[in-house]
Every structure is written in C-alpha cells, then in structure tokens.
Length: 178
Image 1 (tube, rainbow, N blue to C red):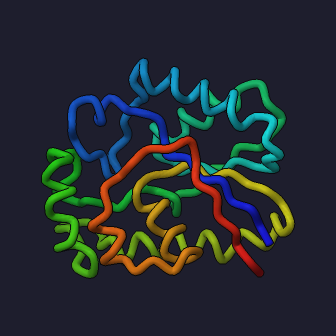
Image 2: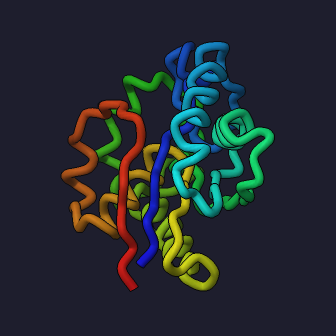
Image 3: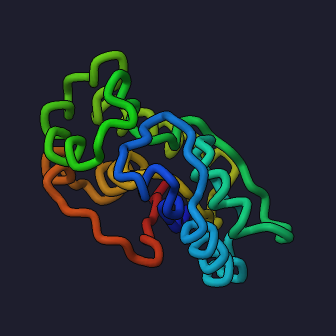
C-alpha cells in the first residue's frame, strides 16, 4: 500500500487572469507563494517520504516553496501535468469549464483528451510501487492529476468528474493498494 497525499499547485498568475494554462508555464502569484508556504507548514512533518510534482512551473514552484530547506526529495514527472489544451491553451477558464465535456474522449485541437491525460497519470501510478511501496508520498499537480487519482483509485467515472465543481481543500488522501 502507498499512501498518497494530493495537493493542487498554488494560485498562479494565469489563475488571477482567469485563463486556463494547460501545458503553458505560469508563475505563482504573491497569494500563491503564501499558500505554498502554508502547504509546507502543513505537510513538512507529515511523514512524507517524497514529493512528486508536475514539471509545469506553477506546480514546481509550489513544491519548491513548500519544501525548501527540507530533506524530502522533490521529483518532477511530466506525466502529472494538466490536460494539454492545445490551441485552446490560455483561453478563458470559464470556457474550459463549460466545454470540457466535449473533450472527455476527443482531444482538444492540437492537444489531448481528458481520457488521455487520465491514462498518462495512470502510468505514473503504475510505476510508483517500484520504489515507494509502504510509504507516504505527496503529489502536486492539477485538475487532470486529481481526476486521475479519483478515477484510478476511487473508481469515479470520468463523465462524473467533468461535471463536478472544484472546491479547494487542504489536500486529498488516497490509498494505492498493491
């Protein structure tokens, strides 16, 4: 069994502008850096053996701020990225939320589908036991990352995930049973 603690990346400059970053890099806002420091205060002594982060700037920066000065290894993995919105990268976030049901199985033009993103994160989960069995790890990522955890570890169908409203909370807990 692997205990997984998931945290979303902190608030980014794109979040402040109301655009969906997708695979674009966006820096944390001042509010985001503050929230990342609070994440570190919450989790630094929480028995975390390793932190896995998406390699997109907003997630990496969240992990770096949260765990700066800690001995906890920080490992970047591209498979934890957000869904690739292709040509619709940095379009208004409200349009992405409204239209995401159209892209569950059909890729965004020049990008990927939500199903493809969920499968990509699933490959990360498949590899996790190779080194981290019987450990507690943190994953810092995006909507696609959390949907994949809910789908693969919680059995939630993708179409149900697409209709849920996002409600931030201080982390989600999952169990990867081997």
